[in-house]
Length: 221
Ligand SMILES: [Zn+2]
Image (cartoon, rainbow, N blue to C red):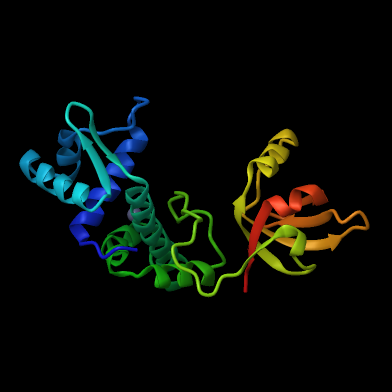
């Protein structure tokens, strides 16, 4: 993660949210829309966009608009995760009410390192959504000595998080009309080496051996 100011982070979050609601296929947003959303003047939004372009966080094409780079998207998603993890933590663990969490999270989201956010996220057992029902980005922004292995090396009775999946495995899940789980526990390895795994929601899945080297996981401690 980069060192970004609160203001820069707010811009990234705003552009990310505006990109999600634009109906065009181009996925770009205008300086005016950004300025309006953040209640700032167009010249100051233009200034900030220039700064973000210099940091390779956004692209700005005249007459086209502003869009996030991959780096910008990842930074924006971290801030969103930070906000939603804090809201969940305050609500679930600290006893705040639903309407109190947002205000507190607006400050905390900028003051938290990826390490802290991932620790809170793991502590709460990887919640799917915040108290308002908004999805918490599941990707990790910090990890300690995480060891990736392919699923054929996974062990019975251990919990894993899926980290990478290649096209062949994706096709398999699609063909079987299955949603790819984020987390799984290995229940049993059968004689033909296929695996019975249990999703976090409790559903059982059978993963054939030929798919297993195409799926990477890391152990959840
Ligand atoms: Zn909120």
